[in-house]
Amino acid sequence: MNFTTLPNGMADGFVVIKKCEEKKTKNGASYLDLIIGDKEGEMSAKLWDFSGSNIFETDMIVKIRGTVEQYNGRDQFRVSQIRPVREGDEYRLSDLVPAAEIGGEQLFEMIHKRVEQFENEELRAIVLKIIDEHREKLVTYPAALKLHHAMVGGLMYHTMSMLRLAEETCRIYPNVHRELLLSGVILHDVAKTWELETGKTGLARGYTAEGELIGHLVKGAMYINDAAKELGIDSEIVTLLEHMVIAHHGEPEFGAAVRPMFLEAIILSQLDNLDATIYEVNAATEKTEPHQFTDRQWALDNRKLYHHGLSSPHHTVNFTDEK
Image (cartoon, rainbow, N blue to C red):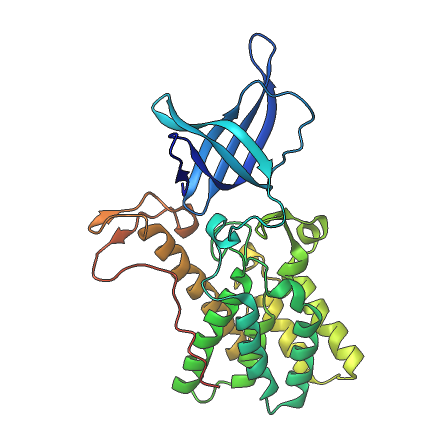
């Protein structure tokens, strides 16, 4: 973890509380049992002889000071001082939690610029209306609770990655309707801002009740239907967009209401899976030394993955904006 070592040998820094429980020792003394973390990892922590009201909670960012000790062969942080962050503290959220390398605001503007140039007026109007209405959450939301792009700004990062893949696909296959495919890419996960519940750090901490009951595929189609009605659009374009969103998980067992039934819907589903898979493979292999295997990855059919060492696995995407 990224602590500063003080002259007296103590460690000092900002961390996120991942778990916080007030417990009692065998002698009846209260203490706080914590899991603290930053972008580099997690560590067990203890605040002994704790008294007073517990103002600390999961997802809280705190400044902490203490010593790193060994307990059962593992590092444990013995807390001497702890307080919530306050105005004037100098820390970066991106040092504490996973965050996209490019800010969500910048990516949103790149996406918005592309839509503004659409020749199809109905696609342009529907997409702009939906993303503008949800802009505040779109620029910060993660793309998932866990797994791919589960980071601050991850939703826009995932969307822009897919958008670049879609643009290249359209250059190779000119019969693909570019604006329809790009519209589906941009809208396919918009309703995750409604499905997921985020904490103070900006990361997802669970699903909303509505998200569990309905899901972002169906809600995304509802967004499209509502936007089209407000705009007075009742053409087949609306149905095509709705189908792309409710079918983008590919198979009913993965949450799709129906399987994709036209070219752009099929491509959307494949690109979504491709981008998520590339992210998962990179995330697993970057933690592994070259010429070694990863642990089994349950999200990838419980496979072990091999790091061949011919290139460096990372999440960087070429987001060169040519528009």
